[in-house]
Length: 214
Image (cartoon, rainbow, N blue to C red; front, side, top):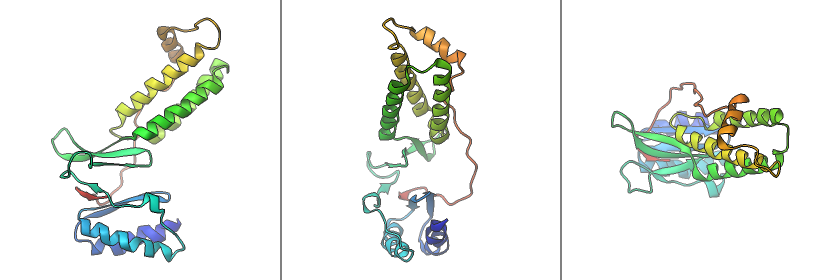
Protein backbone atom coordinates (compact mmCIF):
# COMPACT_ATOMS: atom_id res chain seq x y z
CA UNK A 1 0.00 0.00 0.00
CA UNK A 2 2.83 2.39 0.87
CA UNK A 3 4.57 1.98 -2.49
CA UNK A 4 1.26 2.42 -4.28
CA UNK A 5 1.47 6.13 -3.46
CA UNK A 6 5.26 6.49 -3.37
CA UNK A 7 5.93 4.65 -6.64
CA UNK A 8 2.95 3.32 -8.63
CA UNK A 9 0.89 6.51 -8.94
CA UNK A 10 3.98 8.66 -9.45
CA UNK A 11 5.19 6.39 -12.25
CA UNK A 12 1.85 6.48 -14.09
CA UNK A 13 0.99 10.14 -13.57
CA UNK A 14 4.44 11.77 -13.72
CA UNK A 15 7.07 9.45 -15.23
CA UNK A 16 5.13 7.93 -18.15
CA UNK A 17 3.80 11.22 -19.58
CA UNK A 18 7.35 12.62 -19.66
CA UNK A 19 8.87 9.63 -21.47
CA UNK A 20 9.71 9.83 -25.17
CA UNK A 21 8.75 6.17 -25.68
CA UNK A 22 6.72 3.47 -23.97
CA UNK A 23 7.33 2.55 -20.34
CA UNK A 24 5.88 0.09 -17.84
CA UNK A 25 6.25 -0.83 -14.18
CA UNK A 26 6.00 -4.39 -12.83
CA UNK A 27 6.01 -4.60 -9.01
CA UNK A 28 5.73 -7.46 -6.49
CA UNK A 29 5.65 -6.15 -2.90
CA UNK A 30 8.82 -4.04 -2.57
CA UNK A 31 10.60 -5.49 -5.64
CA UNK A 32 9.97 -3.95 -9.04
CA UNK A 33 11.22 -3.75 -12.63
CA UNK A 34 10.69 -0.74 -14.89
CA UNK A 35 11.02 -1.14 -18.65
CA UNK A 36 11.63 1.72 -21.07
CA UNK A 37 11.71 1.87 -24.83
CA UNK A 38 14.53 4.42 -24.86
CA UNK A 39 17.75 4.47 -22.84
CA UNK A 40 17.45 8.21 -22.14
CA UNK A 41 14.10 7.67 -20.39
CA UNK A 42 15.58 4.90 -18.26
CA UNK A 43 18.51 7.06 -17.21
CA UNK A 44 16.30 10.01 -16.24
CA UNK A 45 14.05 7.72 -14.21
CA UNK A 46 17.02 6.09 -12.48
CA UNK A 47 18.33 9.50 -11.43
CA UNK A 48 14.96 10.66 -10.11
CA UNK A 49 13.95 7.43 -8.35
CA UNK A 50 16.20 7.80 -5.31
CA UNK A 51 15.03 11.33 -4.67
CA UNK A 52 11.39 10.33 -5.01
CA UNK A 53 11.65 7.47 -2.51
CA UNK A 54 13.68 9.61 -0.09
CA UNK A 55 10.64 11.86 0.32
CA UNK A 56 8.87 8.88 1.89
CA UNK A 57 11.82 7.85 4.05
CA UNK A 58 12.77 4.97 1.75
CA UNK A 59 16.21 4.01 0.45
CA UNK A 60 17.00 1.99 -2.67
CA UNK A 61 18.95 -1.25 -2.26
CA UNK A 62 22.08 -0.28 -4.19
CA UNK A 63 23.14 -3.88 -4.85
CA UNK A 64 19.79 -4.63 -6.52
CA UNK A 65 19.31 -1.37 -8.45
CA UNK A 66 20.85 -0.98 -11.88
CA UNK A 67 20.15 -0.29 -15.54
CA UNK A 68 20.62 -3.29 -17.81
CA UNK A 69 20.13 -3.69 -21.58
CA UNK A 70 17.19 -5.87 -22.52
CA UNK A 71 16.77 -5.65 -26.26
CA UNK A 72 16.35 -7.97 -29.21
CA UNK A 73 19.10 -6.02 -30.98
CA UNK A 74 21.98 -6.40 -28.52
CA UNK A 75 24.58 -9.17 -28.73
CA UNK A 76 23.88 -12.68 -27.37
CA UNK A 77 24.28 -13.00 -23.62
CA UNK A 78 22.75 -9.58 -22.93
CA UNK A 79 19.15 -10.40 -23.73
CA UNK A 80 18.04 -11.73 -20.35
CA UNK A 81 17.79 -10.84 -16.68
CA UNK A 82 16.66 -12.56 -13.45
CA UNK A 83 13.86 -11.23 -11.25
CA UNK A 84 12.21 -12.93 -8.26
CA UNK A 85 13.31 -16.42 -9.22
CA UNK A 86 12.53 -16.11 -12.93
CA UNK A 87 14.70 -15.53 -15.97
CA UNK A 88 13.25 -13.15 -18.54
CA UNK A 89 14.58 -13.67 -22.06
CA UNK A 90 13.66 -12.59 -25.58
CA UNK A 91 12.21 -15.34 -27.74
CA UNK A 92 10.17 -15.95 -30.89
CA UNK A 93 6.55 -17.06 -30.83
CA UNK A 94 4.89 -19.42 -33.32
CA UNK A 95 4.03 -16.51 -35.59
CA UNK A 96 7.68 -15.51 -35.77
CA UNK A 97 7.21 -12.39 -33.64
CA UNK A 98 9.51 -11.40 -30.78
CA UNK A 99 8.16 -11.78 -27.27
CA UNK A 100 9.47 -12.21 -23.72
CA UNK A 101 9.84 -15.76 -22.38
CA UNK A 102 9.82 -16.43 -18.65
CA UNK A 103 11.33 -19.52 -17.03
CA UNK A 104 12.65 -20.53 -13.62
CA UNK A 105 16.06 -18.98 -13.05
CA UNK A 106 18.88 -21.52 -12.79
CA UNK A 107 19.92 -20.33 -9.32
CA UNK A 108 16.35 -20.51 -8.08
CA UNK A 109 15.96 -24.06 -9.43
CA UNK A 110 19.18 -25.19 -7.75
CA UNK A 111 18.13 -23.68 -4.43
CA UNK A 112 14.66 -25.26 -4.61
CA UNK A 113 16.16 -28.69 -5.29
CA UNK A 114 18.67 -28.22 -2.48
CA UNK A 115 15.85 -27.43 -0.02
CA UNK A 116 13.79 -30.36 -1.31
CA UNK A 117 16.74 -32.71 -0.88
CA UNK A 118 17.03 -31.64 2.76
CA UNK A 119 13.30 -32.14 3.25
CA UNK A 120 13.56 -35.70 1.86
CA UNK A 121 16.46 -36.42 4.20
CA UNK A 122 14.55 -35.15 7.23
CA UNK A 123 11.20 -36.79 6.42
CA UNK A 124 12.02 -40.09 4.74
CA UNK A 125 10.95 -42.14 7.79
CA UNK A 126 7.44 -40.64 8.08
CA UNK A 127 4.41 -42.80 7.33
CA UNK A 128 3.70 -42.79 3.61
CA UNK A 129 0.18 -41.24 3.71
CA UNK A 130 1.49 -38.37 5.82
CA UNK A 131 4.66 -38.04 3.73
CA UNK A 132 2.86 -37.85 0.40
CA UNK A 133 0.20 -35.49 1.74
CA UNK A 134 2.94 -33.06 2.77
CA UNK A 135 4.71 -33.63 -0.56
CA UNK A 136 1.58 -32.60 -2.47
CA UNK A 137 1.30 -29.43 -0.39
CA UNK A 138 4.91 -28.56 -1.22
CA UNK A 139 4.43 -29.28 -4.93
CA UNK A 140 1.23 -27.25 -5.03
CA UNK A 141 3.01 -24.26 -3.52
CA UNK A 142 5.86 -24.59 -6.01
CA UNK A 143 3.52 -24.83 -9.01
CA UNK A 144 1.38 -21.93 -7.83
CA UNK A 145 4.43 -19.67 -7.90
CA UNK A 146 6.47 -21.05 -10.81
CA UNK A 147 3.59 -22.33 -12.94
CA UNK A 148 3.52 -19.40 -15.34
CA UNK A 149 2.83 -19.59 -19.06
CA UNK A 150 5.90 -20.79 -20.97
CA UNK A 151 7.58 -22.39 -17.95
CA UNK A 152 6.41 -25.97 -18.46
CA UNK A 153 9.86 -27.33 -19.24
CA UNK A 154 11.36 -25.97 -16.00
CA UNK A 155 8.43 -27.36 -14.00
CA UNK A 156 8.91 -30.79 -15.56
CA UNK A 157 12.63 -30.65 -14.78
CA UNK A 158 11.99 -29.80 -11.13
CA UNK A 159 9.37 -32.53 -10.77
CA UNK A 160 11.57 -35.22 -12.35
CA UNK A 161 14.62 -34.39 -10.22
CA UNK A 162 12.57 -33.98 -7.05
CA UNK A 163 10.81 -37.35 -7.29
CA UNK A 164 14.12 -39.07 -8.09
CA UNK A 165 15.51 -37.61 -4.86
CA UNK A 166 12.51 -38.89 -2.92
CA UNK A 167 12.82 -42.33 -4.55
CA UNK A 168 16.46 -42.49 -3.46
CA UNK A 169 15.69 -41.59 0.14
CA UNK A 170 12.70 -43.94 0.44
CA UNK A 171 14.97 -46.77 -0.63
CA UNK A 172 17.20 -45.94 2.33
CA UNK A 173 14.45 -46.63 4.87
CA UNK A 174 15.73 -50.20 5.25
CA UNK A 175 18.72 -52.28 4.25
CA UNK A 176 16.81 -53.74 1.33
CA UNK A 177 15.82 -51.62 -1.67
CA UNK A 178 12.10 -50.98 -1.23
CA UNK A 179 11.08 -49.79 -4.68
CA UNK A 180 12.28 -50.06 -8.23
CA UNK A 181 11.42 -47.11 -10.48
CA UNK A 182 8.27 -48.78 -11.83
CA UNK A 183 7.05 -49.58 -8.32
CA UNK A 184 7.74 -46.06 -7.15
CA UNK A 185 5.76 -44.57 -10.05
CA UNK A 186 2.85 -46.82 -9.09
CA UNK A 187 3.16 -45.60 -5.51
CA UNK A 188 2.96 -41.97 -6.66
CA UNK A 189 -0.15 -42.75 -8.68
CA UNK A 190 -1.69 -44.49 -5.67
CA UNK A 191 -1.26 -41.38 -3.52
CA UNK A 192 -2.18 -38.97 -6.32
CA UNK A 193 1.06 -37.04 -6.46
CA UNK A 194 0.52 -33.72 -8.24
CA UNK A 195 2.18 -33.42 -11.62
CA UNK A 196 3.34 -30.02 -12.97
CA UNK A 197 0.63 -27.63 -14.14
CA UNK A 198 0.35 -24.05 -15.31
CA UNK A 199 -1.65 -21.67 -13.13
CA UNK A 200 -4.10 -19.43 -14.97
CA UNK A 201 -3.24 -15.78 -14.40
CA UNK A 202 -5.79 -12.93 -14.41
CA UNK A 203 -5.45 -10.66 -17.41
CA UNK A 204 -4.34 -7.09 -16.74
CA UNK A 205 -4.34 -4.15 -19.09
CA UNK A 206 -1.05 -2.30 -18.97
CA UNK A 207 1.56 -0.78 -21.26
CA UNK A 208 4.30 -2.99 -22.61
CA UNK A 209 7.66 -2.22 -24.11
CA UNK A 210 8.79 -4.01 -27.25
CA UNK A 211 12.43 -3.34 -26.50
CA UNK A 212 14.38 -1.23 -24.08
CA UNK A 213 15.88 -1.25 -20.64
CA UNK A 214 14.75 -2.92 -17.46
